[in-house]
Image 1 (cartoon, rainbow, N blue to C red):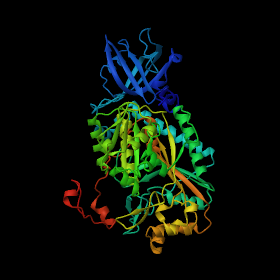
Image 2 (image 1 turned 90 degrees about the vertical axis):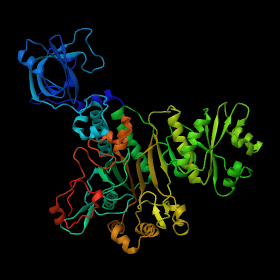
Image 3 (image 1 turned 90 degrees about the horizontal axis):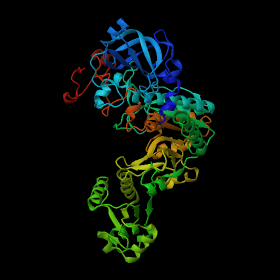
Image 4 (image 1 turned 120 degrees about the vertical axis):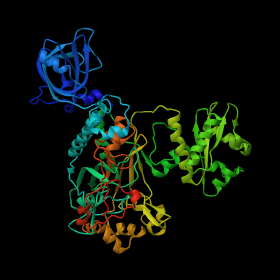
Length: 611
């Protein structure tokens, strides 16, 4: 991340106010001789032979303040200062003496000689130091988030998030989009996760749902003739959390009319080019590569492959169809696949055992392998493989001494999961160098439907509003599982950062898909009537995409968790340690809402009152 590019932006420059003329981090040699007023937090205080040196910090950065004993009142006040005390300083900017300059600090050429110092507020003893790197537990940081956000890395994350948001707005405004808010209190619709629900006091026994996405409303806007909509939308999903999930998150949501898939892709690419150039100084290569879902699963074992590392999976099914080696031959002859991952590295047996245990945890039966020693393959399975098969493998993979081949022989989904898991682990374990810092790719042509065994019905793979390929429409009657869709995901460095599709703009197609998923006519009207009714009134062809702002900024910042780029995130249990949410409510409020709690005592919060 180019911090200097970020720091040159106006968000790091504190504008003049009654208490200050400059931001602490905005001073340099050009200000020498000027009288300035500064205000901020005491980052540190040092006593050097009866002279106090203060590092004063505000949003714009840090500057050194020198307090001499001849300024009696200021000197006495400085002697009582502690970390994070809030002060105001008036003084003269001067060049630091030769040999005392700090090239690592943007203000390192200058210091401020204080004439006056006023304590604006004091601070209690800190639970952790407010510095670049902290050893505090995440729980402590979240409980005292107001302190954590003072740390430069957190401030830089918020600044980057702001800059990305503004770049998105400028880019989409230039493309003719309108920023429109959609409802937060809405009606529950099946979109893949549990809804958060809100009781409606004026309609007893009824509930609003917080939107998992603005999906239906943005489609309604297209039917309304808005043509191009966007929103930095809040989305709410009651699902199990992890480092890249939060119960409430922000998505860059957009929808377009009279477009096809390629229009949505190219628009998204232009927007991201603007974002990365303005915030990171990075020039993205466009168009982004496109990879069909089936190819992604076969070649990389993942629908969100990290393409910076090569390591493509090779299909060897045809080679082993006539093999006498039972594991490979039966898989190849009975509708399964035999696939191989070629790795130009040497592994010990202990390493291979650990890799085998890893794939077994994912459901694989095992991990077959071969090692090339320079003249022949060696491994336990060599004695079962025909010489011509070994010769064909040598010809195909051109191994060097120490080279390993890892195999999966199973049904295609299981083989993909096995070798995809292995590929991801090897990238991490071998610390392979990426080919470039940013690698975007589109994954397209996802299956429209998948079979839900427990429910004995078809369900959507992404959302129920995705349009099937026109050429696959007849298969909705004959082979629904083979229908491909206009669904597409955008992947950045192996992380899905966006998902979108062309939508069903014809009501009869939408109704057909809902019927396949087991929705009766009555259920369709009850849950999707708003959209179905609108589609009957001249809906244009339309499609869109939603990018996860939190995930995008986290990747740009190089952090592992989106909690690091959200001002007030929730924990993995969905709680806010800062505000103690969620919490109990007054029994009288529950009575007004006609809600009676039936929570087992073992699950009840300590101060929860039974109603």
